[in-house]
Image (cartoon, rainbow, N blue to C red):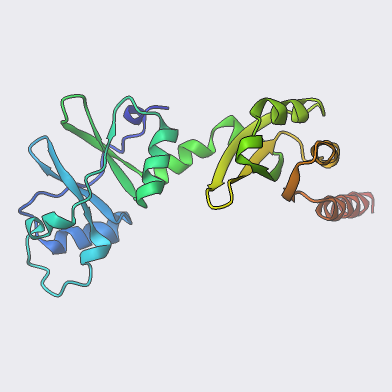
Amino acid sequence: MLASELISPDFPVLSLEDRLDKAINILHEHCVFHVPVITGNGFEGLLPIDLIIGNSDSNKPVSDFKNDFIHVFAYMDQHGLDIFEIMARHDLTSIPVLDMEQRYVGSISLNVLMTKLSNFYSFKTVGGIIILKVGIRDYNLAEISRIVESNNAKLLILYMDTNEENDMYHITIKVDTADLSHILATFERYQYEILFSYPSTLQKSQLQDRYDFLMKMFEL
């Protein structure tokens, strides 16, 4: 899933000569807060409409806000996960795509990107979520994978959130089973601190009760 496959063909653009009212209309019609400003095939920057929406003079040209432009973009051969990370870091609702000659090719909207990512097997597959607290020096991907696989499960997703103040990782993993009891017990045996799991034992019991009730209703 490369940037070239995610481009929205009808994504709106602005020129430096366009007025603010056009930018605000784009916001209302397309629900995007970041619109690329283009000169010919050249990318000038992203106009953050949310910063100028309260401006009382809607006749001002976009060029008056060049100092507010966001100079962030992706290349055509960048992967969707890399693009998602860039958009999340800069809090963008869209990102322009350039070719290797720095020419503007099109834009990717956050909605399109999220829809594509949600179709990944690892995201679509029903499973359980576990969050572990691990010291940075103690992190061992091979061991975490081995613990999951030793309990007849597969590791679908793993990502880390770092707390540099106390040298700890919060590691979120998704596995392909909702029965986490044996996996959790193994993590505890290896002295991992478990911050969160879903479904929990209580939630599993509630789900089972609802299922049993539904089956009884069918028998009536």
